[in-house]
View 1 (cartoon, helix red, strand yellow):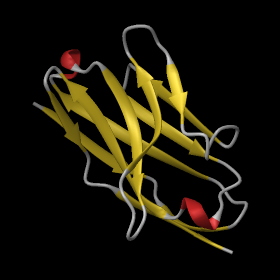
View 2 (spheres, rainbow, N blue to C red):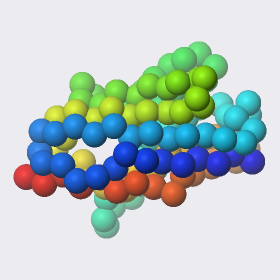
View 3 (spheres, rainbow, N blue to C red):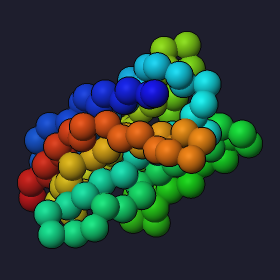
View 4 (cartoon, rainbow, N blue to C red):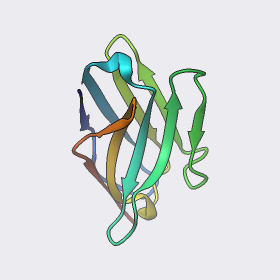
Length: 116
C-alpha cells in the first residue's frame, strides 16, 4: 500500500506561481513512477507531468512545458510541481499519482485556482 498526500494548492492571479507537494508513504519501493494529473470542471483528468523511476525520464504535457517543473526529494519521498506563469486555464484539482506494480494510487487532490 502507498499513501499520497498533496499540499500547496491555492488561489493566485494570472502570471503567479505555486508549488505543489506530494508526500508518499508506505511501500514506496514498489512505485515505478510518480506523476501529477489535473482535472478541470467538466473535463477529463489529464496528465501534467511524470517522472519515471527506472530511467529518470520526465515528460510534460505540451500545455505546461516551459512553465511547470517536476522534481523530487528522495530523502523525503516527496514529489513537487513548481508552477510558474500560471494561466486561468490551469485552474483544476491537481492529483498526485503513483503506479505500483499492477495498481496505482492517487492522492486526495489539491485545488488550484488562477484568476485573470
